[in-house]
Image: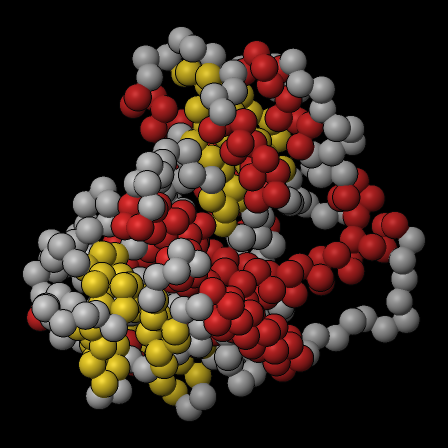
Length: 452
């Protein structure tokens, strides 16, 4: 294009990655626009991390009420749960966050373009009939829940709809074995819903350390969640207000809601990328190089839509690196090694670094340290909760290459451990660190006996 561009950077998608890129570029004095056809904040703020964590909190109170009796608390009447109060208060909180995102964009000097953006060519985007040109286009449209087609699949709901249900179901079938499935199974069960989890695989959370995923499975079952592994749903039939799921085992499950949490796909459908040289994978995700550049030199992409590591903090880091590459010194880069992550299942799982199996593939000899114990809360609370911690050590260098935890506050504890792992901590250094007593976290610096 010979004529001047309307913008230096036009971002499609106002999620965490897109907003961070827009803000950082605008603060450099560049002309920046962000196009969004839904609420600001993307999946994480609206139908992901934030509302999910609020629901997890809500679902844990019942057990806390029960545990309080052992500490001397009594109540004349059992507490009652109101779904509409939780749902509506959650909606208010999300609206507050939406406004914060809008204010941040405005304060940075970026322009918000409301409406569905369709890419017309390498430098032009059409929004509500108006064409805008930009030196660079950044695609940060994230992902969208995927429900496979099968007889009655139209009766299933995705995680998106679960946040806005008119009423809390009495019974639910959750399909899937990843973090979204196990998290919602825990939420529903904790809120008093008779919950059955169905997964076609042999193990839940298959991408995590096997010891840890099995502890999560065991803990879920202790809490009353019914789990059917190596099982698939062949069809869903509606009978009145109920839905009947026919399983591959021959069993039929009747439920008020059937949640499919079987994965997410890049939200690139009808985005107009066919008008460019951008290359898509078979699952709709965008191919990019180490600088997040697509096959079309003026178009970039980051976040969930590139299907690299689908985590909000990763998208934010990718955004900062991209802006530095396009408009800065180009020295920053994303280190995809040792990214900490958490599953807000019940029990909670968090980890950083390599699983035991991954470590054994990479190193000649590995030392494993494991500790399993009852958390102090339940010494008087009377619950069946356990905490399991695991360290994976490269015996040749003594470096701790994996740190895993299942149990209360796992995410909070592993975040701190992630710094140590990133800094290259050795097992000897951890052994020399004095613990905070009494705490669960101190167990990480007191493990001395090898499990294997």
